Image 1: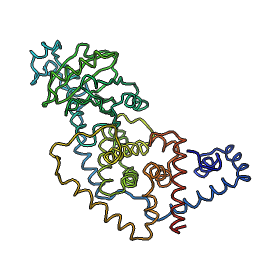
Image 2: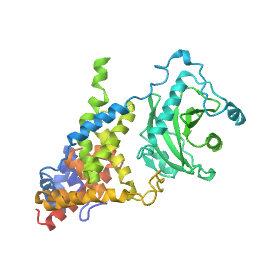
Image 3: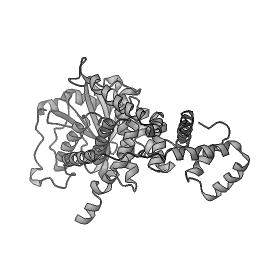
Length: 256
Length: 179
């Protein structure tokens, strides 16, 4: 919106806020000598700043809040270790055997993964990230069912552009997206819905495909399906039934 | 390693800006308890994003997170593109409305009762987008560029919002004879 009267009023304000360089300021000063609108604007700006010198406008954090924040941070801190750092090597062979049966995986045409340490750690982090996101207010930073809103939101927030697909027609409407932090890097989290269940799809670029064939796992009652495509890793996690989550993964992969 | 990791810890980099975080949340939410919730939520988000923070402006970075958390918290009153999921246990007939209403009235009454809080009230009555720009510029003394990054808007929009905020504030003050 341009203020009525003179199109240089915003420049007067910029000068007032110390945002003009010397050359711009000189040019503006010449204009102001002949412009009553800009002269009045300068006076109004000075009056508002005088008003804002009223005491107690700046409201610092109460001490009790500071204490609570420090306490919350202490309990929130233990994040799982980054992949490949602190996972005991002798457990590398441990398969993720959960409620998700081998038979179901085979029937679904999925490789039943023997998780490497890095992946076990990632599985922990993906599930932890999903649970954290289910806390009120954590779910999405951008809430929209429109992929043309969600996808641009990630621009400048990540060093990659995650693919965003609308699976609404297949019964998985898009709800939004957020930034998350997994495996030592910032990742995109896309939020989908299936009936009353939420599905988080974590996406990040990877140098080489760690999971060329889709794999599935179960942890703490959450189902996880992961795959690699187009130089990116995809981890879907949800409390929907394993078959539905596989359906979600299949639909996502099939969609151009 | 210990020395440098201490210098770059979350506590050393982000926590010093707690006052700025609360000030912004307090002005956006216009309610102390709601502002505290927003700040706690924002600090948790900041902690989870912190390892990816590479910038030189932790205050602006934190304020952006606070701002997003505040808008999320205001979401029920604002028009959104989807209906939030019903929360388990919060069925119809729950006591939520009773919890919300009494919080604001004593505060609002107190503000009205005290004359030196008139400016406070005039700012609080500005539309939230204008209030946000004004608070970041005048109380946090941030540059247009920093405000643009925090609010996710072009610098031109920062300038026009600031102008509208100041004009509305000056006009309202004049009407009330505070100037």
